Image 1 (cartoon, rainbow, N blue to C red):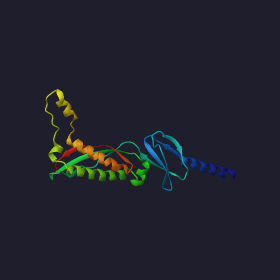
Image 2: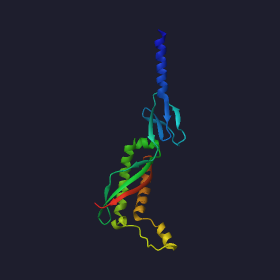
Image 3: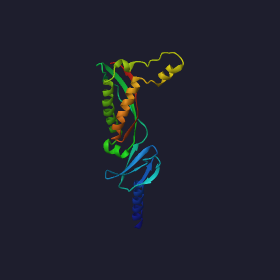
Image 4: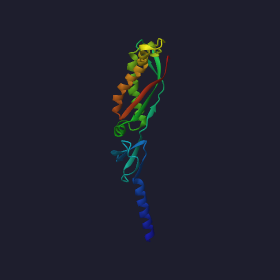
Length: 193
């Protein structure tokens, strides 16, 4: 008669220990929540990977801390001369504040949705101030070797690169509100409709 009770107790303790163990990979944040509210964040600084414990009724949400690439479909923008241009861009980003990210966007799909709105509004504003021929032109170089001309040409940036760095800088502040860090924003392809 005592053996079924002992087996039940051992089984219950085994399940409680299993529900209390959290394995944290070095490539992720783990947010421990209790009834939907964040209690603590594991591996926030990248040095807490390994075995951790939580109470059996608490949950563990995992958020990837690696670099993410958002690669949307090409979009059409209007230049200052009222001519359309197609831009195919990509955004490299990562989660910088996991608790804020969880509260504001909840997951990667929500983060990419917010990034899309943020980047496209800033990109449309910057492209609308630019001339089309400046965006699609090749950087000028006079071809003469040596001297100050080569150094000046090397320091010159293409107007499209300057435009993208302006957009990236403006989007970085807005992305912080969502717990996101924009690492890079580049154009893959530019074309006419």
